[in-house]
Image (tube, rainbow over all chains, first blue to last red; front, side, top):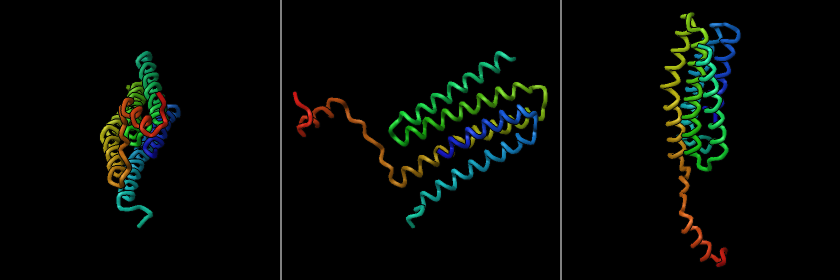
Length: 54
Length: 115
């Protein structure tokens, strides 16, 4: 679900960057995609190591 | 160029709509993650390619969109795999889909189906 949300937000940010004709927003979009990927990877690792049940 | 951009945008909307329907309709966690990740990747890529074609003459936009597309192509399958792997290793059941005849026989044996 986080993957879905981050993909939709990424698409929205890219469209907004073209709408505003701004390169800065595209840079932020790239950074957001990296953060989203890291979030999913680390969250999955946390769940695999037991999560809150430890 | 504009008809191509419009076509790509409409295709991405169709993909995203199918992905949303799949998330609600599919009953198994694994099929949901797989379909959502695949369809989101394709939908994102078509939107990004369409947006890149809007400003194809400005190399600042083109470089950034190429970076974004390359990053998405590499990381979306990886994140889907990590998700499904963590679900499997923590014990989420793969639901077995039984044949209709087997379901009817089991219901008749329990007395829930008459005839």
